[in-house]
Amino acid sequence: MNYTEEQLSQLRSEVEKRETTARFRHTLGVEREAAALGELLEPDSISELRAAAILHDLTKSFTDAEQIKLMRAMGLPHMKAEEEAPQILHGHTAAALIPREFPAFATPRIIHAVQVHTTGSENMSIFDKIIFLADYIEIGRHYPDCRAMREAFWNVPQDILCSSEHLDGVVRRVLENTIRFLKERQLPIDEETVRAYRDICRRSGIYPTETIS
Ligand SMILES: [Fe+2]
Ligand SMILES: [Fe+2]
Image (cartoon, rainbow, N blue to C red; front, side, top):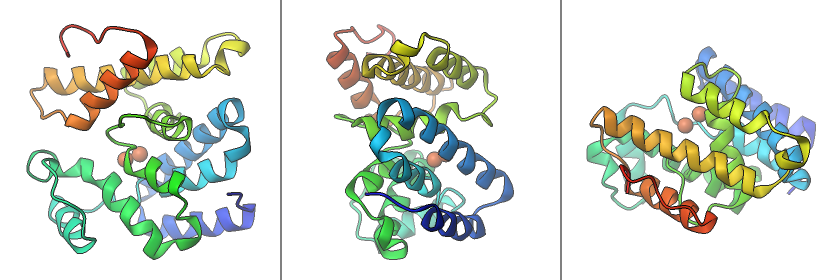
């Protein structure tokens, strides 16, 4: 699916109304990063990647109770995260809202990428990985781990930048960082994140880090 700049610009203004200034700045950062990654890895899908990035945090500002309420209202199945970490549900609730509120952007690729952007998933497509990574390394992220992954992705020769193995390597490290971060703080780790991590390790022929597996 291709979108015109006018469609994207309308989408941006709609989403801007629903997000705080800081969140919207992040959203635009993810859009820019997703487009830059798309140029290298998914050049025919740039406008679709931009749309997914604009929509990815649509429900992030909702409270835990609102996330759960929306899960029920949208008929989504109960998830363990509802008790453990309701904030990670925002990918699911945003994905569920897209067909209702932004039907022109309800492509299977956009919906899936938005749905899994917080946790990752098994069998992630390049499109999914671009949105997942762009969310972590966009320029507005200043955490040391985010900066390190931004460097790890971009500071390599051009031919490596275009390889899906390189993308996989950095996505794997992001998943590893996420699991380690949660583990160190004794926070619940979503099963989907562990599955995503194991899946990408298996596909890359790499053993999962001992402390995580
Ligand atoms: Fe998010
Ligand atoms: Fe985000």
